[in-house]
Image 1 (tube, rainbow, N blue to C red):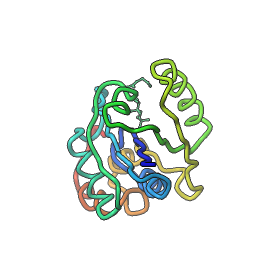
Image 2: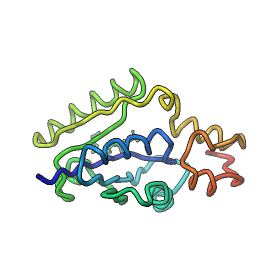
Image 3: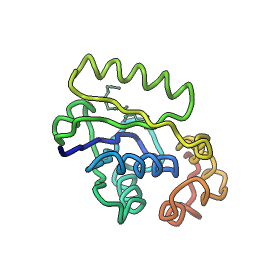
Image 4: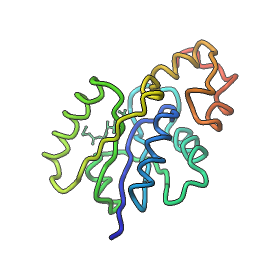
Length: 161
Ligand code: PNS
């Protein structure tokens, strides 16, 4: 059986926590397709750059692809021929958010399975929101984001990140 999972998110920017989820998912599934949401909300990076940074972070990881997506997640799952969605959970707040999203998604399409991986404790504090805050203040990124992301973003100024 060919097991294909989608890993959706905003990834603005991708963090070491996201990368850990992809690595762990790639050990459980034959294919992991990361889909980067073309969110309408004001973020830090445009979707094309978020995709590029994620691709650079997973280079060499077999079975992993990264693509942009817009529209409903359940439609994207169907369009890509996947059978499951994986998400990481760091905190109780994440759990509650995931619970409501999974509830709505199940009402939209009942044939998708949702799989949650608990963040490793040493990575559970990292969020894209806090990375953007560190960036805005010129802090060190090496322990928060994959090396290619740190290399690209360090030194850039993001006054409104
Ligand atoms: O990284 P995020 O911001 O928590 O990711 C949220 C995301 C992109 C997975 C979620 O907002 C999503 O699936 N958006 C697509 C639109 C959709 O399907 N909405 C209905 C169910 S929430």
